[in-house]
Image (cartoon, rainbow, N blue to C red):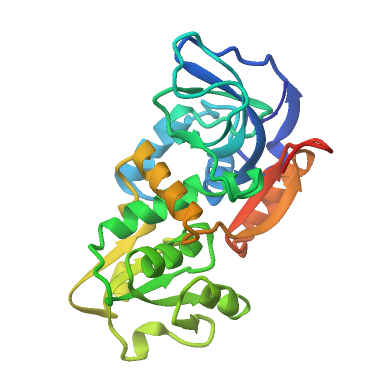
Length: 313
């Protein structure tokens, strides 16, 4: 099978297309033929080894990724595709099932034509109202936004500010905060993305290049930095008494769980959540996709399509 490999840290050019053996599912695994995956900020961070954390967190990240070189040669944190075969003890899925999944807990690997996933992994039947490209963009940003916002203990009618509202996590956070938790949402993003964020459920949008939200006098029950670029002290300036400040790097812990993916599927099928797709690149142009994501201006998600002409979207 074909896969995108990297054996050293560096710029996007360290990625290369290679032929490697097709995996065989173990007794409790499913083999998925990948139709779509994504390139996330996390993928570019791992590829470049430019870690956005410090202290103990940075040391742990370096040990996890590999000090001298990558421990895991195939990136890709999420995918959607079709079950090709199953292990003899697999009961949840059958060949032909359309699925979507997170690969975060199984050594990544979404940037390949095939991926084996365990029966107890974070994998579920694809939402019926999404294409494979759209479904591949749900798990990472969606579950990260969900895990963070749950810590905010948001009540209907409360005021929530999402900083970085046009990114993969932010676009999910705006929709979840408004359409699931029932909050009044203010989104902070660049001027080019104001209408997008408003269309996702924000009642107010602020262009951070023109206005500092901490100087407006408005206060919020929850301030969520969905891109990890605010100083905590800055974000906390806009909190109401007893308000909660959340940061995507500090508050997305807890691991990805199947129950969270199933919740997102339910919300997607109910029309309350829809992934935002900025660009779709073919598999062979993944280097260009990494370059684009690394610029830091993408809207929502950047998707990689592995589908061949004639395959069902």
